[in-house]
Length: 256
Image (cartoon, rainbow, N blue to C red; front, side, top):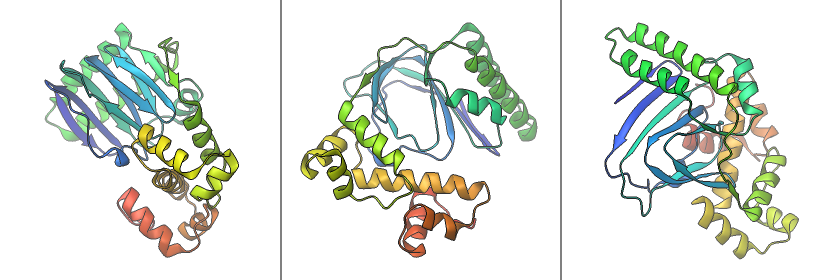
C-alpha cells in the first residue's frame, strides 16, 4: 500500500478493513482526472446521474468537475482500491481526448493488473524524481491500454430527473443559473427538485451549480484566459463573488 504525490500526479493504493462512507459528500469533486479501481470489496458508486454497484475488477475514469461519491452503507467486507489522480499536462492530450469520448466504466484486464503491480514496486523507490517519472510512464501505459479496452457491460442505473438537471446545468454553465431558472425550465417545483437532487447527489442544486462553474472556469484560467474575463463569461455578477467562490472550491486565488 502507498500514497505519494509528484508534480501533477497523486497516486494511492489503499486497503480498508472496514470501509466507511465519507461524510463530506459536497467536496467530492476535483479539477483533475482520476482512475479509480477496486481490487477487492464493493460499494454503491454514484457519478453525476449514474449509479452502479462497484465490485472487484471495476474501473472508472472520472473527468474534472464530475460529482461522484462512494456509498459503503451496509458493506462489511474489506476494500482494496487504487486511486490515480493526474492533472492536465501529465498525460498526452490525445489520450485524454480519446478516453473522454468513451463511456467511463471498464473491467480490469491482466495487463492493467501488471502495471498496477509495477507501481507498487516504483512507490518503494527512494529517489523522489525517479519515482515520479517512472510512475508517470506507467500511468501513460495504463491509459493507452484503457483507451483500447471495451467499455464494461455493467448495468448502470440512470436517474431521469437528475439527468435532466445535469444536462441543463451543463448546457447553460456559462449563464447565471438560479434554482428558480432550473425549476421553471424543467417544469418542476422547487421543493421537489431540491429534495430529489440533494437526496441523490448529497449536495444542493446551488452548490452543484457553483462547483461546476468554478471547476470549468478554473480550467479556462489554467489554459491562459484572464480571471476577470472568465468570471464574466461564467455569469458572475462581480469579480469579488467569483474570487470567494474560487478560493473555496479550488483552494487558492485565480492568479496563483
